[in-house]
Image 1 (cartoon, rainbow, N blue to C red):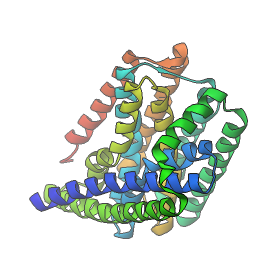
Image 2 (cartoon, rainbow, N blue to C red; image 1 turned 135 degrees about the horizontal axis):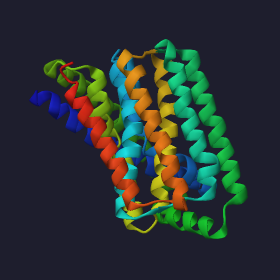
Image 3 (cartoon, one colour; image 1 turned 180 degrees about the vertical axis):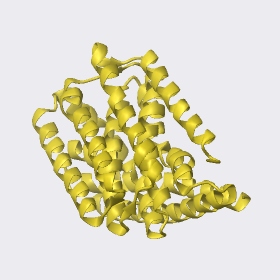
Length: 326
């Protein structure tokens, strides 16, 4: 058991550091290539916090641990809404922009319902994986186009300031290219190593505890791989920029359900366990749907709303714990 815990902890640390290095290096390379800072902020940085989920789920699928892979995807989505958005709202009420209600949130809820429908035959095959990735690419392209067309000057200035501060481009272009390429390489190596250790540790613990890989994926692994999103959202709320927390939750959920699930299905078609199709998927859709009245009333997610989300998440985790021996 100690070996399993050790592998899990080492893997999660490697995932966290690897994801951080990869995002930093990729962001700076994008700036050196003179890519718009708005595009960088909406793509590289937003998706970067979901890289641990991608590495773990694809790695688990490659090893045949598809229950763990799918559990991680669904569990991370539930954790993002119940825990991360709940904690962020407790730290500071979150104002909701009109575009979030009109475009981004409805699309996220639609994608959650789409995944629910795709799982009706208890299988996500490679063709469906291609479809999910294509949908993600199309939506990302549209959001980037919309942002570049409609972003207000204050937002553009803030993004420019933050990214330039992170880029540290004072050392000269040549050194910057090589240094940031090294960061990307180290980050990718960290993700691969971390994913391998997390999968090994999770499978080992599942065998020792005699529980389904699904349960481990929904709880320990999902919470661990979602630490970057949690850290990002809490820091944003403390810096009086709580709207970033909501954007992070919605963006991460879209990347999980479209990008991570799509890539996982491409590596290894994913069979869906009965419990996942009848319970977990419906809980995921319910959490996503619960965001609408919370955001619509007063156009913000307040502290009481955050408490409701946390209570709902605690109730679901309690249910999982009670069914361990079932």
